Amino acid sequence: KFSIAIVALVGATSARHHHHHRGVSLSQLEDSHPIATKWDKKNPHPGFEANHDDFEGTEGFGNYDRVVPAHFDGPGSGDDQFMNSMLTKYAVEESTPEGKPTGRFFLRYLNAKMAAYEILDTHLGLRGKEAEDYLNKYFDKTFRHFDTADDGKIEADRMSGFFRFLCGNMQITLH
Image (cartoon, rainbow, N blue to C red; front, side, top):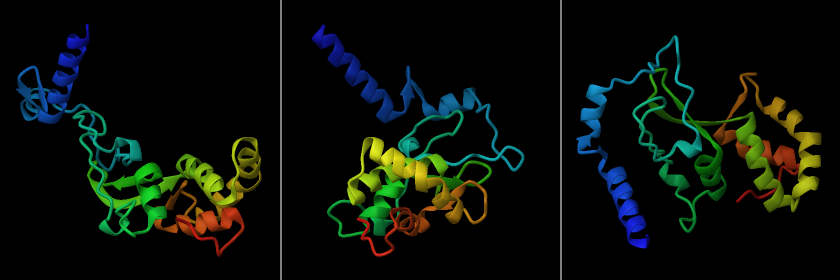
């Protein structure tokens, strides 16, 4: 049983990394099975959530690899860790109507609320019911204040101000 599991794991890994399906390359599969979802100005692509990174699909959202700007490289780089967290865990990458990544990032209401739990925990020490009560009291007001275009999203590069406002401390160091 153990050797069968290893063979299956190796086979699945090999198929994923080489983009082959039963001896057919991904490009051959795309040619023989055109993508049904057509993204355009009439049916614009919704953007790429953070968890779409490394997605290899050909249908729906399509293939996607998130490229985080070099000045937000992450732990150990000395760069802006707050923005690295926002971009790699929570932000949506805007896309063209046809579904091409643009390098512009934003957070929708739910993305920002998920990030708020992390910020309240790490910067105010609030968890569980305390965090929930705090967000129930202040989150909607904060989101409305920063959603200046009233389109349900806030640019990722404005989130430091968003969370300082939410925490009630404009001098707080976000890291």
